[in-house]
Length: 325
Image (cartoon, rainbow, N blue to C red; front, side, top):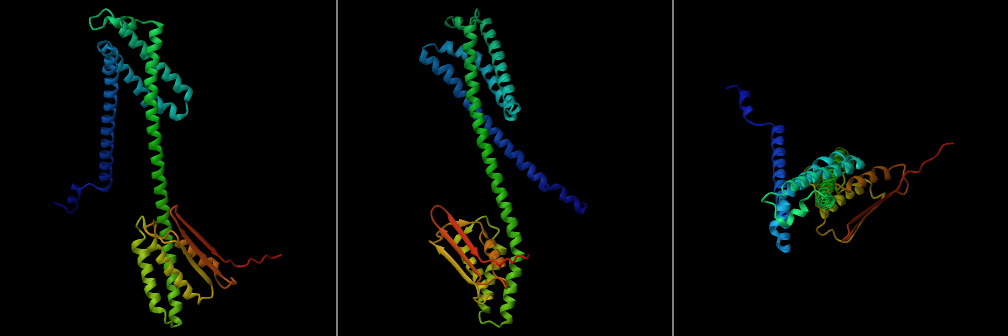
């Protein structure tokens, strides 16, 4: 057998994704069918049997609703899966209401014609003969009934579609936020390593006694950025620890010539945040807030933690802008 022939027995990634999508679609469709069947079974039993039991005329109500039930179903499903997507969701409201009313009136007329044609048959209860005749009163009464059921099912479908749309928008928003965070992390890593290695290089030239501690802090930071930042969430206490390590590295590099404060109000406890959510702002403050052109440089970071959420505030100095005339 050729070397590449064995690979033909295994589906590629696109085939696997397609199979997963079809499987999920089948599961969703099967659930939807079950829900619809249960809804209509309960609806039929209530109208045909329960109301008949209350009125003491179960044979009449069963006969009436059995002959009307197919027309009710047809009106509801034509409305839900044809008229609403084609007209209502395209903001063609006048066309939607006209088409829905036309279908209801047409189906109601056919249903009443069928009831009227079966008046003299053995299956039509005597007590229902008057209500089976094709009269304006019966036409309006039965048409209003179908209209009510169509309105009920329309409300259910529109509410369900609205909920699905909100869930879809929430999912898109989460995916967008996740993509933005991932892009931000990918931008942070090269810039972060370049700065921290420069810091270490500057301190080793000075033969600083703090070099071992700096290497340890840098090692922790690099491990965090490389191996732990891919998680969706991390403990806030761990994020604070690495922020402190980064600030300590910058403080040593700057020889304490910059007023740096990092205040934490309340304990982090068990709160979680996306990794590296605060570090880009702090890194940006050191990049633009301190330097040779900045006098009396300062960076103040404040993190407030409470039951409502987390408040993050950072202030930094800026170089004076000299305007030329």
